[in-house]
Length: 277
Image (cartoon, rainbow, N blue to C red):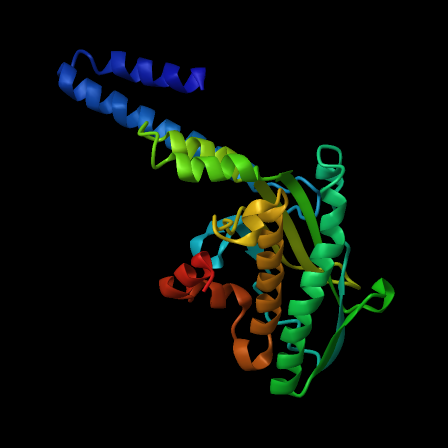
């Protein structure tokens, strides 16, 4: 960054003999803003790098995908090419959060497994019926056709008492922004990485990273539990995984790739995803 500012200063001096001070200020301001934008983009891209080691591809931010960052294999629909197969769901990896949350983190492993089995089983049943296929879940890694891996890379539980205080206190404490700041800290933080790949060849089909996809409503039962933010987000991610698998069925995808389908989603569909419709 000091090097970049040095460039701005050098350019500012070089144009001093030819332009007015007003033009010099405009040029300097424009260059500084451009450099700040580049730095911001660099920071955002850095956040999308895999922390768990699940993927080594470059994720792309795409609002229509409904995740912080994603990557999809753009060479056809491998799932639809086979009439029979099995999907192995690897246990949720909590290595990066276990030390800081030794009590809550282990509870998320069976919780995520139950959500995934529930929603993915439904998606497979619908796909099988619509396309005369026979895909199923398997708990035997060696028999799988497709493998799904998930890793929790960041987790901070919510603070129910503080969250309630921020919601109620905002009506009485008229300090601009204070309720938002307290609320943000009280809501907790959670981030997940996920990949789908060929279980035999290791070919990566999809990789994504997402955080805090769904907020806990203040009037919901989850609002009174420390793990409430984890519960709603794990369930949402399991539903998203099931939706991806269902959308890859021949009757839904046709001759498109998953990447094409995502890019062609309407903004109305994106909005409905965001608010949980």
